[in-house]
Image 1 (cartoon, one colour):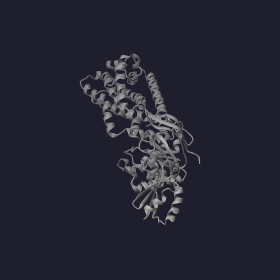
Image 2 (image 1 turned 45 degrees about the horizontal axis):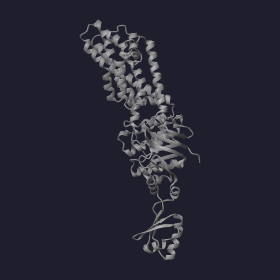
Image 3 (image 1 turned 45 degrees about the vertical axis):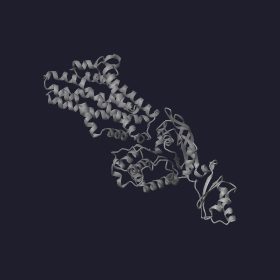
Image 4 (image 1 turned 90 degrees about the vertical axis):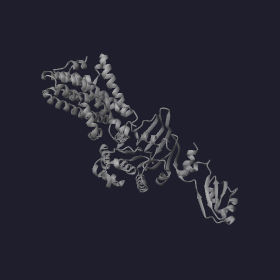
Length: 305
Length: 243
């Protein structure tokens, strides 16, 4: 699949502060999670991709062009900015309509209505945005971004302030857009949300790329971090003894009825564990890998810096 | 372009702002009304030009506040991406901002000029006394928009810098340095006014200074200011960070 966004050797600095440092990456259709703690450079990267800020060094290709040189690409690209900033005195419908008219879309009224329906904002659409909750504002911003039917959608913390129901709706919407072949980049520091949307992530720490790929691949590449697996059994002590010295097992810790195993290779442990249990005549109640999640992977990445 | 001009114009023209900026632009009318009552009818045309030339300068501040806000408010408010990320050449964005800024300044200029019309009628002067003043205010509105719209986009504290320009360059330096007077928007506007108003007073003549009266020359200078302002704004929109 061809990359729709290509970032090459990109750096962006503000005076002495380096916000993004030598990032090279490609984004393709589908949902990609852009992860990083606050100040990691996610927002700056999105702004540079969107053409709002010029790169201090490096290049951007957005749907084949540099947006700062060819603004016609904005017909196919939308951004939902992180800032709460919005036109306070404008109604949601007028706000979405403004976006449609400035992008010169056909059949404005119909497109506006469809965009409002997509974010479930039809009923309050004639109220002014100043009276909206944070979550409703976010949805209005998403509607304004969707009204142009963009091929590339850049979302900077789009779920901020949304309640759980709204979050679920927006996540479903982004996944549908990704599945429909749109390039959707969702920046977030809430890992659970990203995990629900996609397994393709780009992790940034201190302005640099920390990892790119799907969570499992990234985790597998972390060979210096042993896999943690919790095993629950009534005979924890016997299991722990049986596992000591087994192939791929680095450490075994007892914690009540639980055995915490540190393994160099999760696959090998998965193969070996049933054999050990059968040989020792031990019944296993539960086996749970605890650091395979995006959160764990991300914690390792941040700690590693 | 119309959609963008309308959007930028309406965003600037908040009711409270329009009211107090129109009041600021009406200062010359108010002064004319107060002084005109004690003056002979024959003195009124000259008196009017003197007052407009000196006190009417308060309009420059109103124009600064409006024109510099055209894109600065979008930028400071974080809403600039909503208009910046649109499929239009940057020059169209620049022209739209310039037109909106000038239109806002013109609206307030007309409001201020109407106040002088009322004052003119109140002191019993002929309406022809106030009519040429409209050319002064309209020229100034366009000229100041040419400077202050790009300034507002480029400089975070544009109001302060703009005030510095008005006070230091237009008021002090342009009086002291002959060459600078040719670049003063107020004097350029005054030169157009002087060409269509016969009864130019002593103060007005002094304010005009070395700038020659003439509609053609004044309009050409304003056009040059617009071209430079537009080029600067287009360059900034293309080359500078938009946030």
